[in-house]
Length: 471
Image 1: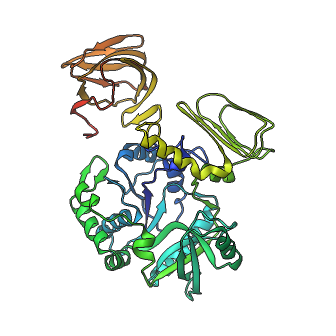
Image 2: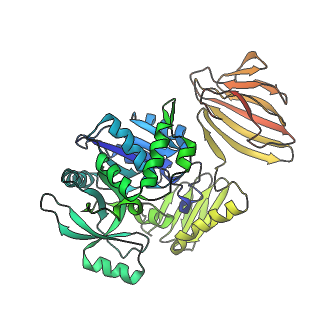
């Protein structure tokens, strides 16, 4: 039985606002180290016996960022499957299992969220080895984390009888997030473990049992995969079929119904980084218990997390705070209220604002753009185009654009006429002109764009040709 890692990268990480946003969620950010959470998840698979290349299931909007992050660590995924809409973990796992079975009738999939921290990689590999033995004996395996506190933010797994052929136990029951009294009782008993959301299944057995407990999910996923299309490095699931799929987690759709659930209890230095207080808990602290990143000055500050992304942050005489600065938003909260950060995101959505979705720097497959200034009938942006990349051939109904090259070389097409621009040169794109920007050079192209017109929204784009096959 060969092992196939499947990375689920569909979360939004709303409790880590303002750093985590819909267009750049926590799994694509370097929260606990120099590499992103997704990259760390993939890299910790190195050295795992009989493990193949990872299969990634992700949000359609994140596809180019994920592909680029994999290139940065020299990993070629088995595939990147794109969900047109979010439908929780059970449908994502079902699509992955169906694909793997077409290539390997004995495939075992290791399901891993893309946004978890695991400090003890050796113990993690050992736990997977124990889980493989349980899978070979006909069990569906989940991994329970040995608790070190009466945590009320996690679901729990109660272990049952020990299995004779491996270090796993049968699952006695799954328990919803408890109140503090029950969490303390679970911790004292020694028979309850945090539900990590990591699983190990025979693809064949998983699909057979999912078909019994949740036939609607199985049928919809079959249609979504059969009707999917491949473009570039991606497999795009059929939108209509996948949107019709019931939304459910693996726990609810399968694990609470099966008679073959097993749990491997493990102590691997695990944390799901579900809030800023969790990141403080696992971070490297100074002598006063502070976790600090960026240009920060502290005086008389204790037990706080202070993170500066774009400018200096100073704090004096405070304790137990979360202070997170980004170019367009600042969060200040008591550490005990970390879970309430989601209320800010709900407020932003409800009031039609964009700060829950985008940063000032917005990444695109060709590079990025960043807002500098915005006023009545004008907007100023910084633009970076990667070497060899090009924007779509496009036109705007409501705005004209001025481009000034700061560094690098730009190839500009206007109504079919090409010109090359070098450093300190500029051009003008009148309203209604068909145009394209390219970087033909070997270094990044940086330029300043000044837009003027009656409407400056990003949806004022008519694309005629796009190498990235965007709509």
